[in-house]
Amino acid sequence: MKKIIVIASGKGGVGKTTTAINLGTAMKYFNHDVLIIDANMSTPNVGIHLNSPEVPINLNHILQKKAHPYEAVYTHESGIKIIPSSLSVKELKKLKMEKLKDFKKEFQNLADIVILDCSAGLGKEAMSAIEMADEIILVSNPEMPAITDALKTIKVAEGIKKPIKGIIITRVRKNDYELSPETVKEMLEIPILGMIPEDILVQDALRKKNPLVWVHPKSKSARAYKEIAAGILEIEYDSDKDKETLFERFKRFFG
Image 1 (cartoon, rainbow, N blue to C red):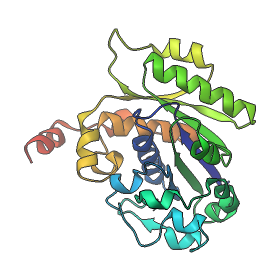
Image 2: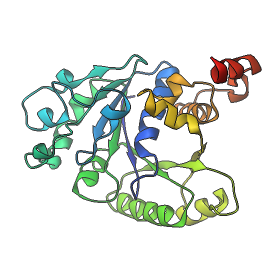
Image 3: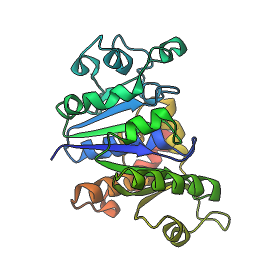
Image 4: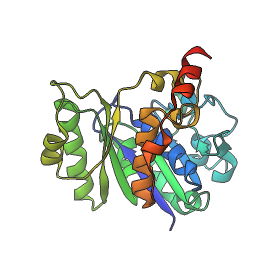
């Protein structure tokens, strides 16, 4: 069944784009056809993360009806497909984000699973993406401001009858200062799909302009994303069997 999943967050800087990319890459790891669309038109980062900051045809051209959606699809070496957005500030003035929903069927024809990385918050851009969703996955840090803003997003999504699959908690340090999973679940009343540990390899993947799941597939964070993807896809995955061996770890550190 074809599905559009919107990755949303109440506030910026919580790892939404990183999650959209790595969740999609993890689903591709399990042999699913995945397309990631950068629907964050004001501050698009999918292309930056994947070494495609400027491309000949992007989502802006689609919304302006200057190109068909299939013309804006680029395939990353990991196998995921992406539709980037323009970095041009001038392009923003020409955009009518409410037209995004007009292309839902065409996007669905491009892949089995379409992931939209939408703008943070509840502005016009974010709502245009949320209204397209078959399911919404929230991303947040285990901190009170981020969780409070996530709650606002939940209430708005419920108001327009959009199902929320659950929340992914990122940058988890397991210290005494962050909110516990129990507290988060009690506050939001939605499932916690998974916890992504704080991991310096996330920064290394960004430096290499590749998904973490692709360049460091056996890292703790990559395995966490795979666990989440497997849960969503309802397939089995044993993360313990996917751990780095001592030799692999030595090779990664010392080349």
